Image (cartoon, rainbow, N blue to C red; front, side):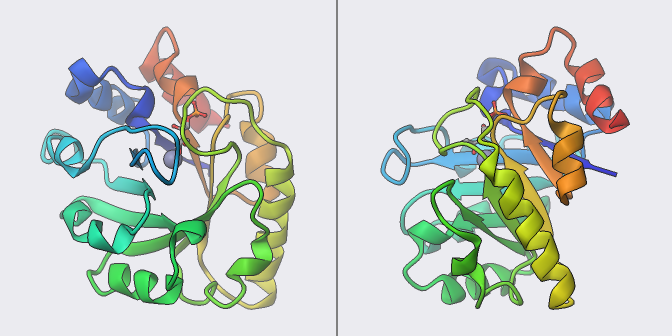
Amino acid sequence: MLKLAPSILSADFSALAEDVKKIETGGADYIHVDVMDGHFVPNISFGAAVMKSLNGKTMLPYDVHLMIENPDQYIGDFVTQQTAFITVHQEACRHLHRTIQNIKGRDIGAGVSINPATPVEVLSCILGDVDMVLIMSVNPGFGGQKFIPGALDKVRQLAALRQERNLDFLIEIDGGVTLDNAKVVMEAGVDIAVAGSAVFGAPDVIERVKAFKRI
Ligand code: DX5
Ligand code: ZN
């Protein structure tokens, strides 16, 4: 079954705990936490304090997506009992292997993400070390953008590599996921789909999460 990680980037920041309760009631699997620094991506979102304000307000695990430069400096801030994954961008890491070990050394799942213009091949030497690969299906920085179809080829390529090399990392996709393309995404080999505007922009958020989970 496709797991769903709604992105709180599209939630109502003035009522974050209530919005998070809704996705939990609907059956979401993770809370996707989009951290943007205004350098790696042309937008600033929020930091660890906002994420931690949800500690104990929900049982859902955090799926942290760091769209920031120099992630090593901040990884420790996002380590909580509820943190399931911390994902960094390949494009932001000069020493990716070291950064991945930094995350794993804290008993947190380590993820690596690639932008639409970055080929899967750059991950070849790190695939055996990561718990998750996050394929960006939009250029990171904003919610509500259109899905870039080429991301599906990357998912298929990764799924094939995973099988070929007998690895067990999860495949996540992020950006422009809607009820209309969720099935194709799942069939391509995605384990976890991130959805922001398609969840929090819905008239009934709980119902929308349930609709995703029925796919
Ligand atoms: C993009 C973020 C995504 C984004 C998804 O930079 O990483 O997680 O919030 O939003 P939608 O689902 O609206 O494309
Ligand atoms: Zn994200």
